[in-house]
Length: 226
Length: 226
Image (cartoon, rainbow over all chains, first blue to last red; front, side):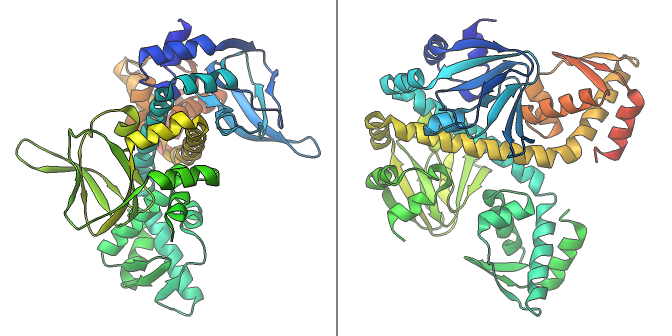
């Protein structure tokens, strides 16, 4: 497959106009790493980002004792190193090939030059990423709506219990922290809070949550939200 | 709260340098819509995108008979209309306020001008979106790893059954279609296939999957992947 075809199939560039795919193909370096070969090291300048074409890459940190803590595995089609490179930062961890791995390398300087000459490339990439985020959010909604309402109900009952059965609860953590505690994202948590409110189980006002129907919440907590 | 503070709290702009937040504040229009008031219509030029500050917005299509099909609800902190606006397209659906709703409007022209003058705004926004995608992917992994391996095992056993007990299966759908059939994303499906391979249950080679341990797959299908 040609470099252009490979790039067109990378989700990060999905649906870009063919002229912009060709521009990207012009700046790419095609690289192969052997099993165990380092790709970049923690603290190095983020001088470009990578997309896996074939094989597998691990991203890891090393403890003071030299123990490996694996953060991510990346396979075909997945970019890595792009967050620090876009943000103009150093690589925050090490990357190493886990088997023979082919990657495309996009040098930061050439990529920034492309965007300067052609801001619509950046806009189109923002559209691609926003669209994927939208899709992922919908999927997280789907996956979370099975269990998170029950976990949220259990958490609210626990808070009430801790406060001597109070019906007015003040959240002491942020919505983002609560979402992550319950295993979801803030957007989905908002929709769940909205759903429980429209069912008359609770009433929300910023970080204050008022329990309106404690039996209903108990049922929800016990059924696991199904 | 000032406009700058509101913008700084929008996930789409999370962690942008304060100078860039101030640039964005300069181009924003602060708008309030009453319950039931239309915000934009399907087919209109995407001349700018919105972020909900308070209230709730629904995005919907209308059938030929005038029946509403709701696509999304958006609440505080969530952008809408940004995908077509970044991509330079028309709005693909209608948007309407479901209650009194305050939004910030970012006109496309001013936003594109900002990016032309300051490409690092686009790069930083790409970093923000990539980081969120990374986080969402990890969460989808977490949520999917509970049930998707079991569903995948059941699907492979079904395919084998359809092919008179064949152990060599050729997927007739793409990996993206299979992921969506199983309720996950291609990235997570790859990781699950990798896991089943390393457990010796299957062997994969492109779209061909070879069943190595049918009893193991059956156990997995029955346990639901837990």
